[in-house]
Image (tube, rainbow, N blue to C red):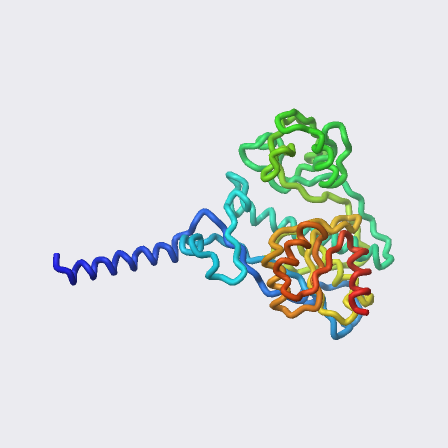
Length: 331
């Protein structure tokens, strides 16, 4: 073969390799920043008051998709990207579609809880009773697989009453991985009991787990209609900005003229719980040019500060604290 033909063959092989790297999916995921967006267009509240300019509430999400082989090697080609191993996104055996379904269920639940918290803060009589830990997904090849199902509601664990996901976590704290634990759950309005051997929690080998994703089950009756159209956005992390916007629409001056981005899962008692993707969310908040970014206190706030580059980060532990922080920030 002549040198020219060898060179041509080399170029063809190189082109094929580059094409493979650019198009072939890897086993990892890519987290990408997404510009923060105003919440107001998504939220409708019965009897809402006219908008009070100039301030706005923003929510921040993260773009999550499979990385290509090229992005796996060079994730830095995207500003603010993070390469995340598959087992940090999807537990073994849980499909992308199952993960997506769970994420959308979490969003639906977070919207209902956000509405309850905001309306109660506004002085409405809200009937909201924590009713247990709702099983959203069961991780294959874990003790819960084949025993518990999605939509089961765990109401007791290791002899302790479970009204919230936090109660379930606390009930398992004294349990050593490998020990058995008895759980009681409600399925089709019937109370059932199961004994499960615990396993080490993913990423926390010293903590016992049973292999389920749970969220707050609650009996909620809202005194006014609240509608939130989040489209294809999933996950529970927009609970805090939703609650802030609902209160704003009811006539409270929540933003005090500031452009406010916020993230955090909100619980029925107003607690703001940690969420993921703070690097990308902080970059997304900066791209929107907001004045302040409310984030869950602790590790989330520490991570946000690493990427703030001048953006004011305000850590909060509760919805009530978030309201006070905004009033102070506006002075």
